[in-house]
Image 1 (spheres, rainbow, N blue to C red):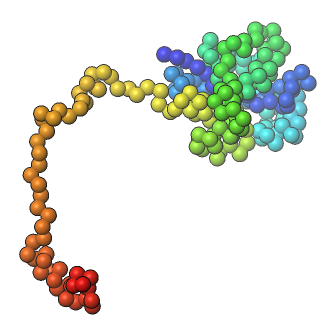
Image 2 (cartoon, rainbow, N blue to C red; image 1 turned 120 degrees about the vertical axis):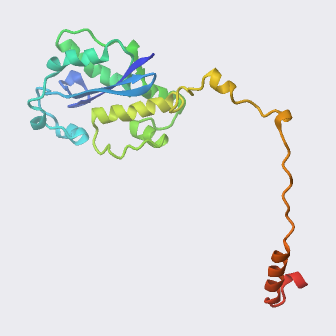
Image 3 (spheres, rainbow, N blue to C red; image 1 turned 90 degrees about the vertical axis):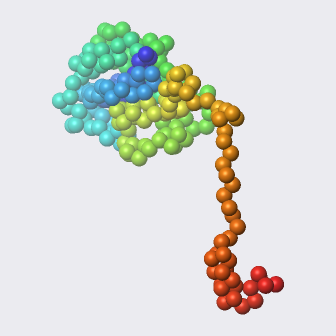
Length: 225
């Protein structure tokens, strides 16, 4: 049984080195690449303002976020959910940069890049030169992303879980057919085949009479040429 965690963040900006912080954390559990229904999601008080350009992306404001836990207050529950599972992240360098900056701020160990599966890199290898954003991959795989009018970490995790499964090769990872089941369905033996009696195809007298009446009612019918 393989456990993985799909992870996403929303932030106040693009670079933690400029003082930007995480405002939303979300993760969903996969077992053998399929969602189990277990999720983690928390808005976070960034302890700073939320620039208007960031708010336009995810819809979160300073006023809304006040009263939610800080990263330091949410981190233990978050890390417990991750456990030691591989992390599936789209454009992983961005999220890891913010997560590790937040962890360093409170004196915690960083998340190593070696445990991350970057779906952006997977998509770029599979479709070189093609757009590889989450929206572009949803369009490619006909995944309904109509609810994504704003970026949201939990919704993006759910969409990414579907994208990840497609990037791995399809929606069904195991056929679920045992050898015993398959052995009961074999080729039909010629010895067991019995020919059917041919069915008659000639018209009956009644059908011939009906046809003659139809032809008689037509002007210059092709049957009389």
